[in-house]
Amino acid sequence: MSPSNETAVADAVTIGRPDTGPHTLALFTSELHLVFGRARTQVGLGVLAAVPLLIGIAIKLSGNDNGAEGFLGQVAGNGLFLIVASLGLSLPFFLPTAVTVISGESLAGESSLGTLRNLLTAPAGRSRLLAAKMVALAVFCLAATMTIWISGLIVGFILFPVGDVLLLSGTTVSLGEGLLRALGIAVVISGSLLGLAGIGLFVSSLTSTPLAAMAATFGTFIVLGILTAIPQLHAIHPWMLMYRWPSFADLLRDPPYWHEIGRNLLVQAAYLAVFYTAAWARITSRDIT
Image (cartoon, rainbow, N blue to C red):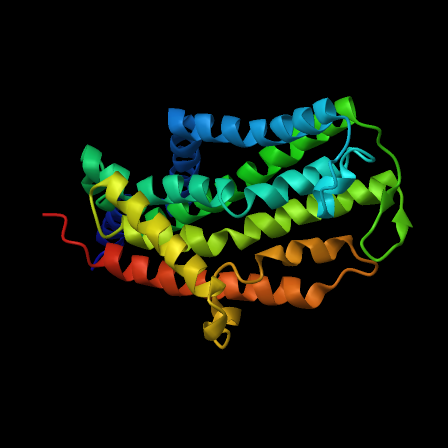
């Protein structure tokens, strides 16, 4: 083959092979715009932002904590605890519901609109499409918890006195350190939602009906919660999705108890790995014809 022919073949291969870098970045950016541009996402974040406001107003109007225990009982004395109390109260229901809606719609929504077929044949590829969906879900989990964190910070500082923070271990730390620990709690809680997001992504890959995917994901969450609440099943409790969710409170000890937090995040990583792999197997073998 002559040098000119070799050059022509190389040029043809270069033209035929898409530059994955720009395609991948554009895909991730587009997915973030899609997730956060939806009206239901914005409404959901608005509802989450209202949680600290409602809690703060209720405590302020009552004039005291009415004998409440835990973080809720400390809000009136230090507004910083409104952040932690709001995150803790949102974790069992509001945050999982928001993640269920977004993850259930991730692939099923595209399929119902007829755009999934075009995405599966795009140069970015199926694996990168799924990765973009998962990264967008992870970003949403963080955005959801940070929405509560920011709202709790603003409302807490406006309605209540704020000062040094008394930790669960009896140690007092500065306001700055207290804010950092509260920020760490938000990050841990967002990580605690990744297992549920992985389940939702997999379920979403199985159907073209978003409502069915949301219902199935939330149903799975309910079943896991019921299994966690049955004392006779204590042997499997450590492997349940939400069993160690309350470990976020260990960041308010001196020093923090990292053991349970680490085990919680490992369980979330295991759920995410299993269901992300299942979703990948489904999406890469899906017939687009």
